[in-house]
Image 1 (cartoon, rainbow, N blue to C red):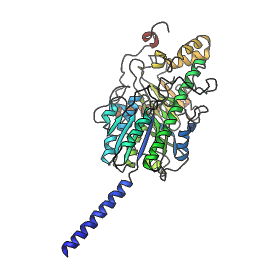
Image 2: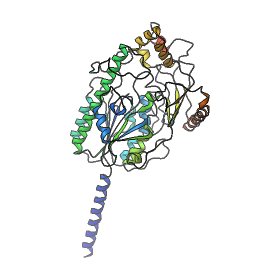
Image 3: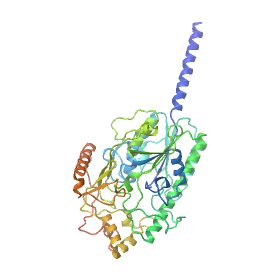
Image 4: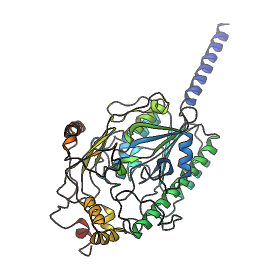
Amino acid sequence: MTSRLTRSYSSAIAITLLIACTVSAADKPNMVIFFADDHGWKDSSVYGSPSAKTPNMQALADQGMVFERAFVASPACGPSRAALLSGLMPARNGAEPNHQMPRPGTLSMVNQLQREGYEVVAFGKVGHGKETEMAGFDHAQDYPKGRNRDGIKRLVRDYFSKRKSDQPLCLMVGDHRPHVSWIKETSYKADDVALPVGSVDTPETRQHWARYLADVTGMDAMIGEVDRMAKSYFGNDDYLFLYSADHGAQWPFGKWNLYDTGTRTPLIVRWPGLVASGVRSDAMVSWIDLMPTLIEIAGGTVPDGIDGRSFADVLRGKRNSHRDVIYTTHSGDGNRNVYPIRAVRNDRFKYIRNLRPDCYHSNHSDIDRKDGAGAYWDSWDEAARKGPKAAAIVAKYYQRPAVEFYDLANDPDEQHNLADDPTFADQINKMSVMLDDWMVQQGDAQQVFNTPYPITGPRPVEVLAGPKR
């Protein structure tokens, strides 16, 4: 009798544990995270673009939550993605300028999800260069950049067809679009596109912007393809789908800049039953917050000592706010962009500090002037020689003051620098001190990587591409 009771009791325990494990697994949602490369936050129908055709982003927005004020840590691919995978700002993870790898052991997001029982895989551009390998994905594979723009679809399809694991899945997909060089074929009419504020309006400018928008639309179509494949694989849409981009477009005053056109990013989250449909949130969040948010959703404990903070309660509708201020940094990109910048932003104001105002701001676009990237710059120089409006835009691009200060409530496009306006002197001083204190806490040495180009000498394009420019 005792033996029989013991066996029955043991069986009951086993069944209880099995049920508990099943419930635990069910509480860990599958996740599909889709990243674009160089997609400006304004450049979709979701965020009000009058030109961009993005039906799949729009469908996500209609079914989920749109973040109006999401920001990246840094407006260059490497630092932005390292911040995402580490939950740490660039000075703390070591990936400060573009193409500099983070310190070993800092990219812990993937490992944290694996500890919670997840299989974590990456296709396309998720980390930057060796960052993907350093992050420790269970499986990761990129596709040849520029050779097959639909390569992601094949990789994801093949993975789903061969997958045997019953672990909860975190699938990260990174489309290279709309990173330069932009596709030549475009259905957008150059004369009809709405150019970004601060652009010199020339036929060449319009042609390149139309090509950029074509890549945005192509990337948007891939969002739909990946979502449909995931829905077919899981058998329903009961999974979290998140879309975002690593920073703004490679365009003057966008990528490599700390204006909102460089650091503000689209962020859309659909999660049936847990995220309300058709909601737009004003909560300020940062890419460093994605790591702790996903870990909390996975049922894990957010590690101490990271800069990111979970906004899972915002997703679940329990909170309407998250951060009071956003800090952003930029530390350069090779010898094309040697221009370190720091900034702090709150609900209304932004304070930008250009660490080397005695030098030219420049980047790959105006120096290399490649087709499908920055070839329009010759037309900008020509327009600047002929008219004051274009000349002012070009001058503003190349030379920046030590401090820029913007009233975002009245000047959302950051066109009017109020740094010398005595009306805002107290606010400017307050935010300057905030930035100083934050940099000390971060251990930010404000290092200048590579050799800058003094404004007393030739422009970088003349140094690197020759005097013909």
